[in-house]
Image (tube, rainbow, N blue to C red; front, side, top):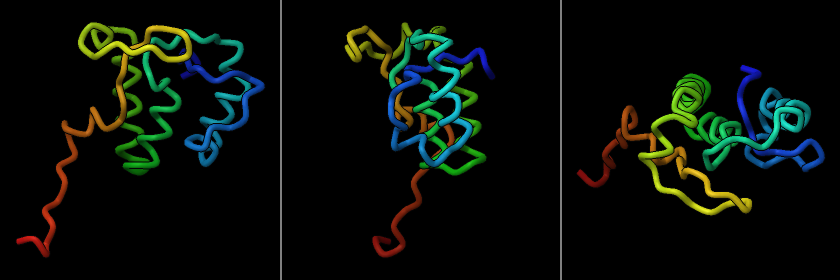
Length: 112
């Protein structure tokens, strides 16, 4: 997994999304600076993984993070909208945009 690219810098303070996960925090703090700021997606893959883990738990969060890594920089850059962030043109791919393939909200039991 060291081939991943992330946007955090070695001197930056921990991100609130990743401060709870020691593996992501370690990657962003120590490895990301050496790997460079090359991730074409927004949020970066490590931030996406942190958000997916926080929102959907360890199993589905890990599956969603792996799915994102497989899509990162490939056809997703042509299919998703482009935004301007951090002075660069990046492909917008938030966690919420990828819930559809497995997550169906449960109906409100009081609204039935």
